[in-house]
Structure formats: C-alpha cells, structure tokens
Image (tube, rainbow over all chains, first blue to last red):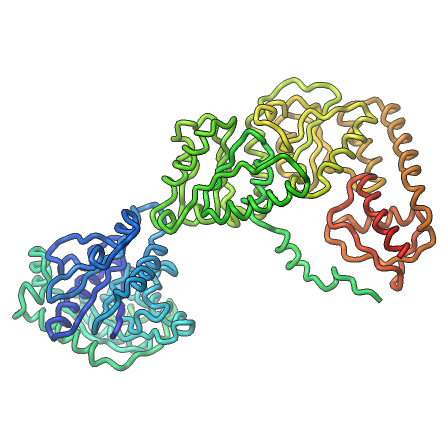
Length: 268
Length: 355
C-alpha cells in the first residue's frame, strides 16, 4: 500500500487534483482510498457526484458505535471516500479532530488498498494537520503549488514540516515532489520546477489551467469521468503515472525567506 | 559534613515542582466555601486530581468537608467540537443542587480550544449565582495565580460598607497546609492582645453569604506574598490598610503586633503593652528548650525563603551554635508562623538533639 498526501496553500486545487488522481489511479485498476483532511469536507465531492458524505467527526459526534459503512463511501471508479470533517468554525480543535479520525480509521482497520491519498487542509497549521505525515501514514508528500509567491511560500513551509517530521518518529516520511497547478502565469512551470529543484526535490507534473476542470466540476464529476478523452484528463493520468513511478523520495532543504523572494523575483 | 540538600536542588527544578496549576490553586480556595459548588470545566481527570488531593488533606485534618466539585467531563468529542455545551450541562447539574454559589474554573484544555466559558455562564438560567474564574490551567500561570484569581473574583461579591472598629479579615490562608488551623490560632492569639477580632477568613470554612462581610473589616491580614496581589487589590478596593503577611517566627510576632495595632488605630501605649506581654510570653515558651543551649547543629535545606532567618533567631535566643559538624537538623517545609510554629520546630529539634 502506498500512502500519499497532498499539501498546499488553501484554494490552490488540492482537492481537484486529489480527486482526479484518485480517478486516474482507479482507472488503471488500482484499489484507491481518498481521505479528505479538511473541516470543509469537500475533498471527495466530485468523486461522489456532488454528494456531501457524512464526515467521520460528524458521526463521532452523533454516535458511539461507528462502523466502516458509516464513514466510508464508494465513489467513481470504486474509490473509497472518507471525509474527516471538523467542528464549526470558531470552536473546538480541528487538528485534534484529524488525529481522532486517524485513530478511528486504524481501529476499524479501514486503511487499506493499493493507494491511499490524503488531501490535507491548506497548510500544516498544527500537529493535528501534520498527522498524515506522522506515525507512518503518508510516506510520500506532494506539494501542490502555483507560481504565485504566497503559494510557493506555503509550499516551502510544508517542506519545513516534512524536514522536521522526517527527522523524528516518522522517519519514513519523505517529500515525493512538487505538482504545479498553474494559474496561467508567465514562466510558471519553470519557476515551480526551479523551486522544486532548489528544495532538493523535483517537479512531478504541471497541470495547466483549463476550462475542462470547471466544466467537470459544474457537472459534479472529476475530469477523468466527465471528459475522459480530454487533454486535461490525460494530464491527470500522466501525473498519476509519474507518482506511481516516482522513487525519488527526499528529505527537503527548505529555502530561507530571502531565497524564496529572490527566486520569485527572478521570474517576474 | 552532612549534605545540604538545598545545594543539590537546582533552584528552577524546585520552583517548577512548587509551581502547580491554576486549577488546583483556585479550587483550594473555592472548595472552602461550604455552600458553593465548583464546576471544573475540564476533562474529568483534572477534577479528579484536585479532588483527590483535597480529599486526602481534609481527611488528614479531620475536616467535615467533601470538596463540592463537579466536572464538565470533557472528552475527545468536546475537545474537537468545543466544550461549551458540556459546561452548560454541568452548570445545570450544579444548579439542580441549589447551592448558594456556583463557581466555574477553566482548564488548559478549554483555553486551548477557545471555549468561551464566560459567555456560557452569562447565558445560563442560574447566571445570577455563577462566578466565572478564567483560570485556564497551566496557561493561566501557577497555582498561586489560580488562588489570586479566585480571591479577586470572589471579593467582588462583597459591597463597600462602613468598617467595624478593631476588626480584621484574613485573606488567602493556605488551605492545603497542615498547620492552617494552628497558624490561624496564632494570629488570633496575637490579635486578642490588641483586642482585635477576626470577622472573616476569606476563604476558609465559610459560607458564600459571609463573603459579603469582607468590607466590614477595618483592616486586612494577607496570609503571605503568595496571595499578596489579591490581598493588596482587595485592600485598595475597600480603602483599608493591611498587614502583608502572617508573623514570621518569634520577632515576627512583635512586628505583626505593631503593624496590626497601627492598622486598627490602637493607641501606641496599647500596642507597646501588647508587645511587652508577647515578649514575656515568648521567654516563657522558650524555657523548656533551654536544655539545647550550647548544642552545635547543622541546618538542612531551606525550602521556603525566610525559614533560615526564623530558625537562626531561635538558635540565638537559646544559645545554639551552627557548625558544619553539628547535629543535622531539619527545617520545617513552610516558614514557621509565630510562636506556635517555632515551638513545633523546637520540639522536633530537641528530640533530635536528645538522640
């Protein structure tokens, strides 16, 4: 079983990328599970044809004896979909919620398959959101970023977390690479590729901005399902293949803020 | 040469060990209001820890007190989704017991997840009898911060009023020390030399309604520097003088008499008469220990500041010498209060010296 986690700035397209990667993996015959680790609980929505599935934490709030079928739902291509969920904004501790979700999934022996994808909230804001990296869950971390400075800044911060955690009790956690989810900036792919190189990693794939994505989402589907013959679907398939073939897992060397600014300035 | 333990204990380690949690400090105050219920907004373990400690101490002291604590019983569910509902339910249970006062204390867990305990208390049907203490567990500081927070909040229950002459209220007794009653008796003994009576022990074995009498005292006696912030603030609020601490050892009794006498506006000749009587009393009390005169002793660790000074003063009066090869003696854990505190120490010393 390969366990991978996608991290990146909020709104950068992690859920869209995760869902399309899950769809692509399943298309190639793999047994896939996708776990949304964000209180927004919309990670798997396109795999579930727009359905908001009950969240793990919502079920924990409602009932004591939770079974797999209460929290695991089958989506497109047989992908098993889970949403951690979280408290209402402004109360409680979402980070602890993520930890509790993992503890429950472990207890139910629900973590299995060829590929488990963790789609994690925008940034590593606390130890709870680092959970997928810790305790031997995700061994491969992929940073999703555009060429925008703040997006790179967030990706660099996550690289810092990977570095810290890989030196601790989850010594098998490594950075798998960087995924460029483009915003149509000039020289964007080159910028993200150089960023990946400078932190000691590599660009896994570049996903161009495409109306196909918006169209698929309006129709509550992944691109792979809605428009399987499209160029964008092939992009996701190539990205999934690159991840499957990726063996270059590294402990990153995050940049200093000045280095990051210098890099971003170079491509302006 | 006997080893002096205090030289081996890093100061910080000792301080950290004594620091404690605000929850324990606050509850050590609130539990001694017999008709109040304290709601501990925390996982049940926090309430259990404090309850066990208090229960063991009151059992030891044979006090008819079962700490009236209720826990909001937070679990993982409350940590993740917020504990405000759990607090509200705990307040319901507390209110059902119809106590005179409900006091809520918050823990580090509730502070970490951002529960608004005060809002919950304000919105509760029993809000008029609820006092919210923002103790916040370790995030609020040490145990003494919890005590100060509790004393300050509870003092708001008392209105300003005309002081009664020759009266004092005591603020912040150490409810958890084993000598608390002996120490109080010593203070009461000294005050009686000046004709001063104690109107309120704030908060030691009182009822909630008695807190209203706080402002009746013509001056305050603060237990020690630990609760000085609350004591001084209360004194300022009621515009009354205060004595900053219980008497330290023998000469501390004389200082205490003079300070208390001035606070109560006792005429100078009355104060000096009380001082003379006290000095004669001390001389008489020291007589049984004369047999220790000429002994050589070595003092052990001082765990509370000022204990060395109090002990050395007694040694000087009794002609006991301090020497590196002297008989090792143990100093009391707490600074001895007045003559009774010194007597207790001297009894133990005499037994040790007699072998």
